[in-house]
Every structure is written in structure tokens, then in C-alpha cells.
Amino acid sequence: MPGMFGFMKSSEKPLALKCPGYLLLLFIAVSAANIQAAVVLQYHHVSTSTPASTSISPNLFEQHLSYLQEQEYKVWRLSRIVEQIKRGTPLPDKVVAITFDDAYSSIFSEALPLLESRGWPFTVFVSTDQIQETSGSLMSWTQLKQLQQRGAEMANHTHTHTHLVRRLPGESSKHWRERVSGELLKAARILKARLGTDLGLFAYPYGEYTEELQALVRDLDYTGFGQQSGALGPDSDLSALPRFPMTNQFGAMDAFKTKVAALPLSAVDISPHRHLIEGHAALADGVRLKFKTRNFRPEGFACFISGKGKVAIDVSAGKEMVSVSVPGPIDLKPGRSRLNCTVAANSPELEGRFYWFSHPWMYKEADGSWYQEP
Ligand SMILES: [Zn+2]
Image (cartoon, protein in one colour):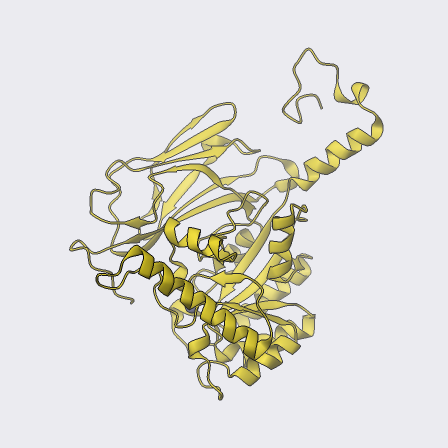
């Protein structure tokens, strides 16, 4: 027992002898509450006839829901998870939120019946300019209203679903801020007028953000969600919360089981910190990450870069901090990539679960132009 909480000197008497019983119970409660993990799942289409990169089959989607049900995950509204983190109220373990980006029609036809029959809430991130009076590949305003009445919450995904980090030719910083604020605020106004809601939840189109954009989202008092992997916890950055993208490829059952059980891991330092990588020498010296020591074995760290798989790392562990570095040069391909690092939890009650960190990059073309969407 002594040492369990990490702050007892060996000369001190065991905790139980020094503390009244209720304090000991409190310590135990706080220790259990340290397992605070909420996982947000990100879906697009639930269909077999839509693009593979953003689709999950209705069958696999139903398997996801059945697993969550069997394993007694708590499916919460996304707004509830965010509120608890903001208030500092401890999250219970095994909380999940289900989100859909872009308001595709298959959410209405395929996902809604499966979610509604379980009484589970979900969140749809809507780009307001794309929604029409009648449904097509996207749901109509009437369908969104019905969805809302049947358990969904509607959130902000900009007005026009543009690449927010990209400046227009010759655009000043001030004009960029005005244009991007306009994207969020216009969508917020329309959601308010059409559906009577503004939850302050925002998903970055394409999962793309920079520190400058995060600051703007913070200034507008929005909570931002990306598409980088990981779980939410008390230390999460509310301007760029992770979500696990779920498709047939990334949501196969084995991967799904590991991902919904993920534990939050925030870096206290990332060097270089930026998300937008310009110039091929930018990551010549690699990346260094610093994490607070948790109940993991530092030597168990593994890091992965999209398109490269597992990469070589150097790990050095101090008493309070663990440094993980990916030696340079890191040569990315133009487009979006991610650095993911995971480490297994080292305690019996967290058996088989991983702390999960993810840092997204946008890498421009060699001539400085933006990459094309596939
Ligand atoms: Zn989108």
C-alpha cells in the first residue's frame, strides 16, 4: 500500500495509520476515478454503396453497438461528456459518444433505427450550407429535425465545409480570422434558426487544425473535435479533442474493441509542436514528446506514422516524465498523416488497455502548394 499514491516518503507511517477511515476511502475513490476515459467514435456513411474511405457497413455498425451493449459501455451525449470535463466532474470509465460527420442520408435510414431501439443518443456535425429542403445524399432539414426529436444532438461543422487552415491568395491574418469565424458563426446561426440549438460543439472539416485555428475556436467559446485517435480525459485539450474514425477498415471488431477501451494520454510537450509542415526539412530532427509518468511501463511505448507503420523510437524515463522521440528525418508524403503512440496500462484492473496519443500533421507539396483531396 505505501507508495501506491506516489507521494509517501519511506519514513512516513503507512497511510492507514495516519488517516481517518473516510480519508482513506476518499483516496481510494480518487484513485479509481483516475480511470477516466471517454471515447468518441466518428462515423460518416453507414452503407455498403458509399466511398470506402468514409463508410462502414450497416452490419459492422450493428456489431459495434452490440459490443458496446454487451460490455456495458455507457453511451452518452457528446455534450454531457464535454460539460463534465469543463466542470471538472470526474468522468466514469467506459463512456462512449457516437458522432456522425456531414449528415449523410444513411444515418437516417440505417443508423437511426439501431440507435433509437437502444435508446442511445448521438451527435451529427452539420455543414449548414450543404443541407437542402429535400434529402439526397445528405439528410434534409426536416429529417434533421426528426433526428433531433428522436435522440440526436446537432452540432457545428462550419457553413461550407472548407479547409479552414488554408489561406486564400493574399489573405491577411486578420481577414483569415474573420472568414473562419464567419464559417462557424453562420453555421451556428442557421442551426439555431432551423433546429433551435447551439451546443458549442464543433468538428474541424477533414480533421484539420493548426494552433492558430485552435486559438480562434477557443476565442469563439467552442469545443473542437478532430479526427486523431485517442480517448478524452480530464487533461484533454478542449480545442482539439480526439475521435476514433470508424470505417470498415479502421473499425474491424478487433481494432474496435481496443479503441473503445483506450485511455487518455496528453503530451505535456511536443517539439516541434506544429501541425502544418512546410518544407521537407521541417521534421529533419524528428519529433520529441514528453508525457507525465502514469501506470505504464515506458519501455512498452510504440509509435506509428500513417503510411509508414511502426517507427523506431528512443524512450527515456525519469521519475515524473517520460520522453519519447522519433528520430529524424521524418519524411512524410503530401497530405494528412498522424503520429500515434500507444503504451499498455500496467495495472490489473486495466489489463489489455492502452494509453493512446495522436498528433495530426498536414504536409504540403514540395512547391508549397496544398495537397489535393483524394
Ligand atoms: Zn466533414
